[in-house]
Image (tube, rainbow, N blue to C red):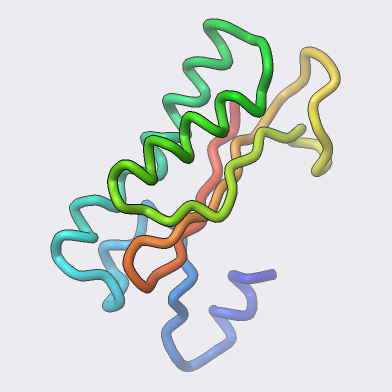
Length: 113
């Protein structure tokens, strides 16, 4: 929905996927170098989940703490089932979702597990 709205508009949107953020004029040079931290936080969550299992919310809290230490303002990180937006109940395909502000730009991303 966000992408359709942004794509149908003739003006740039501050909401974008973090991996393509280097194209966004809202980010300064230092922010462009920092933008890779959001997907890296997701990859760290994924590795921890695969290796340890356990309480999913703890992994999200670690990712948020990692981003905050670097000056980000995280909105959320979630691990949900890929098939629907519900908390996992067993061994099923998952997705890590999250959004955070870097400067004045809100970045969103996801990573399938």
